[in-house]
Length: 416
Image (cartoon, rainbow, N blue to C red; front, side):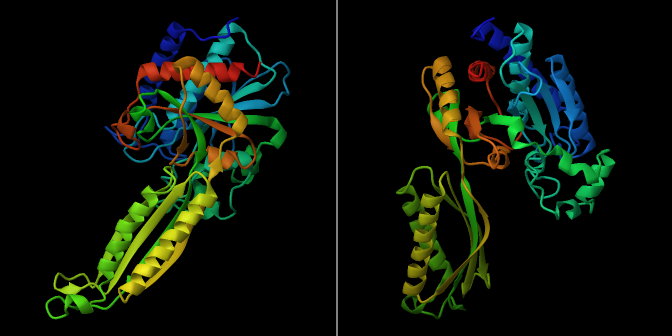
């Protein structure tokens, strides 16, 4: 019995993870691309293959009532609560092969190492391959993880995909019982904590020349539809000093908002993603401009404070330029802090295998958002080339995966 996963063992396991990522990437509804959406035939095929790998790792395997593939490696006692590991198996359209899958397959290797050495922990170790994190098919996210927490909204079953197929119909076609959705819910006492390994989806680890980092929080987000209303006029006849140019007001706001955000907390980000000018003619001063603001950060209080500053700034600019400003929030999700104790466990493990650790927030959403509503969550990030994700160019290094496996091994073994 060993307290370490040797470099040679980790390299061998990492190569297997990479090969299995390639194998899963071939399970796609589109030739030459990776697209695998919730409850599609490809999703169910991926579940079966992952279930086979779980069985080989010594786990009892089942597919739950919302389409998650699950495995359990018992602890000292059959009824012990579980340390839950995993991520998701669905993808966006024309995806990369590591977002989600890397976390599931790395978890399987961790359990396989426990099984080979005959190690049982006071906790069971469970793995879940969540069925829907991306929301690609039905436009609603976290269906798999919200199955575990028992928080499916009542209207989800009637939501439709692009072909008019409802979630209820998709469940039925997949051989799942619509009336048994609640069976996927896990009691609070059954799970001790959740750990998710995931590619970073950003450039911070690469810029720091580090393979691994520990997530502090998953960013909260606010999205707003904003409008500057001025006065349209002839581009040639209205003097510059007498204009109420809505686009000029919007441009001034965007520039100042970027400066204000840069000067605030370095983990806060603001994005103006769309812009529409009306009436939209080359020879007419814009009388109305519609634009969207997306603002994100790892803690709600600083995030809301910055948002208020930006809105106050927009109002001041509009008034100065003889325009009106209006904003309407249409999306809000709270920041999800990772558990402090799990952060420390992961940080100690990362420091042990790479010499130092970087703590950083996640700008993207994860299944941990839903799971954190009921259980402590921790996340381990793995460097990805150029910070690219949700794209076929998504890339990770085998050596980085080997280090991640060593860190995950130390973290799990710490529960012994």
